[in-house]
Length: 297
Image (tube, rainbow, N blue to C red; front, side, top):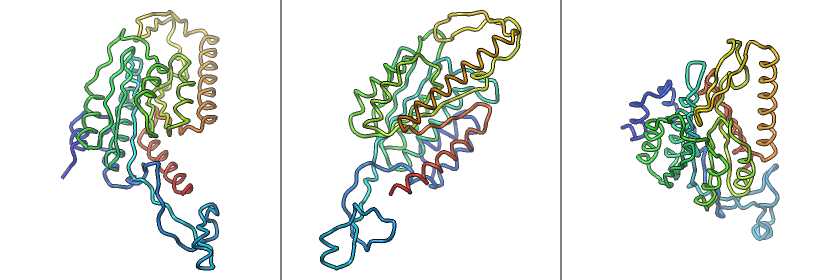
């Protein structure tokens, strides 16, 4: 029998929603674990084991090195921080950025709820914030996906202040959690300080939603561009090669700075594009994360 969130995913007009079926198979059930642990059984030391886990009392008694294994706390809390600015209702390929946001949120909600973990959500909607407190149920995860789908960001709702939204999250997210931040990060600077502060206590996954036009300005003559958050307009002569080159250089510099920040702060960075197979990119990211997590145990 399908779970509530499976039923919602099947009914909603998600981009290639059928590809999310792979997340119901259990392949990634063990990807998200709690952060705590308790002492478990001992076993004989093997080459490559962490010497810090040697139980010296048992070693002395048995006259052979033994280590103390740990039992992971399998319950954790995860927060989705979702940028729902009208800026994301943009795309020049098969999907809008907002479509990829919805698909990514549905996928992570499936993984988290199917693993029996608590899921909380902070919707960043321009100048407004909506919070769904953490709950451990597939019905709750289904409601998260439904609300993401039903909300239509309207023009003029204001610029998303990501720094302010992260400050709100820090005030409500008290225990060590997994924070999944989903945005195109084409926002005013200042959020980096708040995210760095969150990283000291929480594990962070930064999901960057991209479109080709974030990096390349097409030659369409003189065109008027409008900021959907504020309604402000600007006229740009895209037929001028110098204008297009300046745009591309600024975009590359912005991306390089973003990636340096993620690397410096040891944040997991997943880039999903409207012009690429978002599902394959997500799957590859999850597999890399799984391998890395297993290597740390």
